[in-house]
Image (cartoon, rainbow, N blue to C red; front, side, top):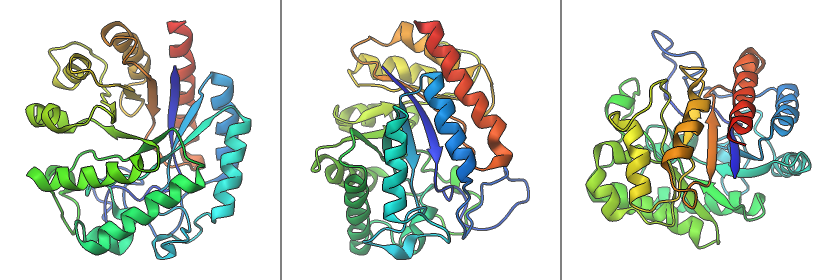
Length: 303
């Protein structure tokens, strides 16, 4: 059973310009790495002690890729630093999984290439960075591709808006999946596309892709569209890693585990993922610690 936690090396994934008015703190893209190593080390220890066994690392522009060093922010990790940190995770019993979000709502980390989506130049860069991440992680079990929230509403604060629709979204998605699967790694995505396009999703989504439907509320039931997706994915035979968060409700993760353990067939329930959606910096320390504690309680409650 996977007990996972999402951690951020890069946090350049929401807004492509510095517009703090009315926005959640830390949302805007910045030219420097936002990452505190002492906190990272503390959280690795806390995660291991809480029974977490898998860490999804949002890489973004936080690595100086050999193939495309121009993507990196100031202070990005070298390839050697990344490898050393991955070795540290494994010593803590934590399985590291790479994440690069290719949703156009969350691809600010791609720098100039975020403004040439679906072009030959874009495909070349995507191919290179996926292959390099897989190599650096020594062929991980999964590769998280993101792919959430690609809508006009979610880009209302962006200066530059890109929304793929219809077959273009699927063609690009299949391209990402191909890059991951040809390396013998299993793709993993956020599942919210299914909320508004269920028929198309179930017609076109490969069963090989691991699904993380996410819901951060405190009430659960199939009458809630976001929760209904857990049932629909189960009915259609997809492997799932349901995702909770302490973004808005401290009790969400434990209730997610309780609900999904009862409503998803065990052979399709690979585990659970916790998400605090905060950068790995000291002002967010308490939120991270609470998220880890919530996983520990949920795991104990399911035992």
